[in-house]
Length: 120
Image 1 (cartoon, helix red, strand yellow):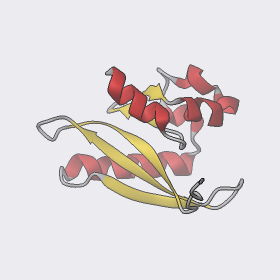
Image 2: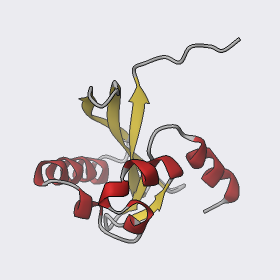
Image 3: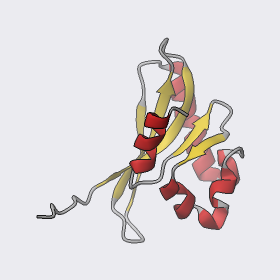
Image 4: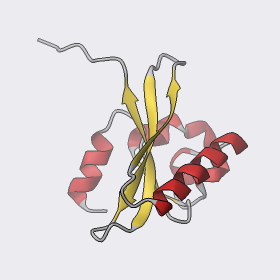
């Protein structure tokens, strides 16, 4: 992974788990490794995303993936809002496409609904 792109993903406060088109985990940022430690953390890289998801989540991922495959203009789909464990985030699946628009992977994106307070 390009050093600059890796730095951008690693700087995210939210977990980022990047998968290829075979649903294999190819990268996890440090936040994701820590968040998903009880499922294996960094050892999940190289494994199927479905190894750490329940059947309902697998169904959602496959449905969104099919939508991305069928519609090259679709690149972000809302999946749910997480309001537990001190979080209030909207969760999306985001398509990753190459320069020609072909689907090359995807990742889950967490967008916090809690705004940070500016530190002065």
